[in-house]
Every structure is written in structure tokens, then in C-alpha cells.
Length: 315
Image (cartoon, rainbow, N blue to C red; front, side):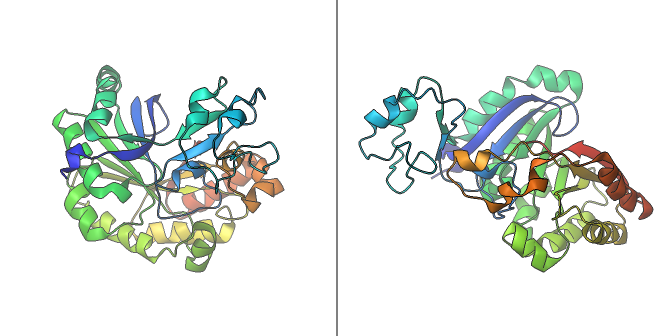
């Protein structure tokens, strides 16, 4: 089947964004990621599958959904309200819920569907020097789909930016993405490979090697590469990790990077999709990071000759 006729699961499309690149941007959030970071601010983006979400804060306890479920998958006795083993994801409960406490996470969209949404914001791109940001999840999970989307945007004069975890096949990325993209935000979260495996579900050798190749490849191009590190309490936000990343960036002649300031507004997202995450219970995860801590890590970057801008890690 031609890629243009296929549909892929998109988590969300967010217009009018000021936090995902230069100018006013439309952000396409892809569903699916090869990593499984324990602090993920979009845990609903980890799987490519459509999911059923339940938000107890929105529930008005009318029980219409419970009474309508033919599988008996909904009960206030269930730890997460939804028995995921019984649920067949017919989404009838979503249709009947009067308060939107139940919702569908992920919607199948084709290239034309996404381009239609993007074109609504063309005037904002033109007046602010903005564009489209491909985020997730991990957009490179859909390499062919992403490649065609980027090329269509470029044909319309739209600035394109990719946010990536760097865990991709280099040759495919180079052939299908690199020659079309304008800007890349590249996450380098944890430098130690064993710690990366523990907290992100994969070792990081591929990520670091891809970064080195990418940095060399773009030297004679107009593509802008910005490495980014999220500051996660007790995990990435340690002097040892930030120093190791700063050294790595300096060795690769990087002079500008971004530190993403932690925010704790993601904690209830795991419950909504029926996921038990022990890190949610950690006290430090429920708190904003102190400014003196943030400044300490920024100073480490600066001492390595790297200008480290601070941006809040969205949820």
C-alpha cells in the first residue's frame, strides 16, 4: 500500500506552541518510542497502540460507562478502574461518557489529514518564522511516513524541526530524513550505558554514535543541531552525569546545548493509562527542582565551554 494512503497513530497535534522551536509552531506528537524512560512526561506515547484513558478527576460517578460495558471491564473496584485484560477497546464507554473522563489516546491519521491540520497555521508560521515540530514518542519510528511529511512541509516553505531520542538506524535516517530537515533537537539523557539501560530501557551506544555521525555530517549544511538533557532528580540530574555529557559534547566541538528543567506535572498520567510506575511514589519526583540545583548543572556546562540554555520540560 502506498504510504500516502496509510494511517498511523498520532497522539496529538498541538497548534500555537511557543516551546518546541523558533517562532509559533504546530507540534505533531507521534505515538510509539523505542525507549521507556521511567520519568516520561508523555507515558501514553510509549506504545504505538491506541489506548483507553481514565481520568478520575473528571469522573462524575454516573456509572453510565460501567452499565454499558458488555465485557464487564469497568468497575470502581479495579485498581485503575479499567480491567485492561477484559477491555476490547470498543470505546463505547468513551462515546457514552458525559464528562470526558474516559478518552481515546491515539487516533489514526494519514498524511493528508496531518497536512490539513498543519496548513491551518500557515499564517502564524509566516508572521513568526515558526513551523512544524515532529515530536512524540519518537517520530523516527515512522521513518517513511515522517520523510514524506517533512518533504511536503518543505515544498510549502514550512520550517521543519525534529525532536528525537537518537535511537534510530543511521543509514535510513540519513537517506530519508537528513537532507530534508531544518533543525534537530537531540536528547542525550544519560551518559553511562548501564544507567541508560536501567532508566530508559535501552543502552545508549547507538544514540551516542548517531550523534557523532550527525554532528559530522551537518558541518557543511544549514541544519542546526541542538543537544538537550532533561534534568531528572537523582537520575540524570547528578554532577557525574552532567559532567560526562558536557565532556562528550565538548569533545565533539559542541558549544551550545539545552538543559530541560524538570517539572512534576506528569505523575498522574501513568494512572490514567493503567500503568504502575514506582518512580511516581518517590518524593523528589513530586517536587520542582530548586533554582540553585539548576544553576549548578548549568555551570558545569559553561565550564566545559557550552552555553546551556534552560527550558522547562513540558508535560
